[in-house]
Amino acid sequence: MSLAIFDLDNTLLSIDSDHAWGEFLLEQGAVDAEAYREANDRFMADYEAGTLDIHAFLAVALKPLADNSPEQLAAWHQQFMASKIEPSILPKGEELLARHRSRGDTLLIVTATNRFITGPIAERLGVDHLIAVEPEVRDGRYTGQVSGTPSYREGKVKRLEEWLADKDLTLDDAWFYSDSHNDLPLLELVEHPVAVDPDPTLREEAEKRGWRIMSLRG
Image (cartoon, rainbow, N blue to C red):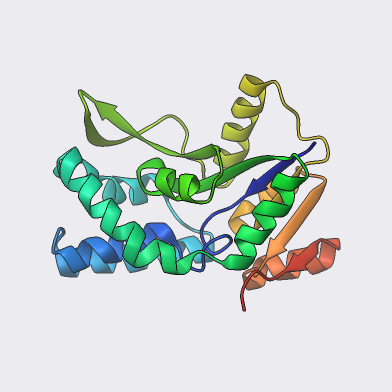
C-alpha cells in the first residue's frame, strides 16, 4: 500500500476551481465586477508564471467568505458544484483514482485552493484526505484570514510533512500527480512523480528528469 497524492486544479479537474469560483461570484453579482475580475485574472496569470504572492491572493480570495453568511455560501457552493465542478471532473481522473483505490493505496489531494471550495470536491471524488488552504473560522463565520501555512509551493511540502507525522505515514513508494511547475518542490520528494497535462515549464523539467508524463483529457 502506497500514498497516492493528487493535485486538484487542472489535474483531476479540467479547470482551476479557485478561478472558477471567482467567475461564479461575478455571475452572482456577489463582488464588485470590474475590480474582482481584474484581480482574479491577474492572480491566475501570476500563478501560471510562478510569481504569485499567495498572501496577497488570499486577502482577496477569502474576503467573500467573510462578507457572506454560511447559509448563503452553502447555497452558492451547491450551485457552483452543479454548474462549474461537475462538468469539469475528468473521467480519466476518476479512473486513475479508482486504480489506486483498488490497489489499497491511501488517496490524498493536496491543493493551494481553500478548503471551503475543495472540501465538497474531494468528497465528490471519494477522496477522504485533503490538504488545502485553511480559511480561519471564528464564532461560526469565516474571518477572511488564513489559518496556518498556505499549501502552496514549499507550503505544500510543509503541510504534507505535518500530515504524514500526524498519520504516522511516510513517502515510501509515494506517487504525486500534478500539472503545475509550482508543485516541483513536492514532485521532487516522491518516488513516482507524474506530470499530468503539464504546463510548459513542468513538461520541460519532466522530460529532463525522465519523469512520467500523462494526459487525463480527451
